[in-house]
Image (cartoon, rainbow, N blue to C red):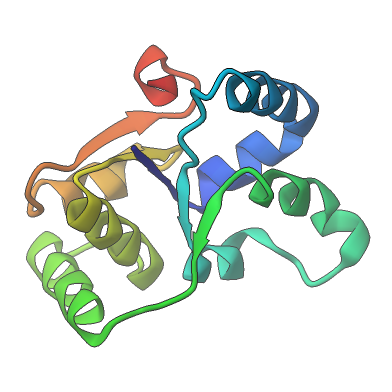
Length: 135
């Protein structure tokens, strides 16, 4: 399973046609595992303009957008951020979601996310476009 941060959502949104083609193929074969996108990530990758946000919104159809933010998860994200001494609150939440689901994080912001993940259990951070990002 994968959790996407805002840089991954934005990057994949710029190539939404090929991503959606792959999504349809994998879904037809019963092989699609929807990546998780915590709703707080949308704050960083949407602009509030329907035209500019169209590609990202298309991508989100193929994702599992998690809207809940339990207090325990927020506290865990705060612990990760304090231990790492870097990264945004959104980045820390992405890593906390990944830890909860025993998932990898796909990102373009390797430095911050890897630093946060060093303090989490079982979280791997992989760059967008790497072979590991697709599995």
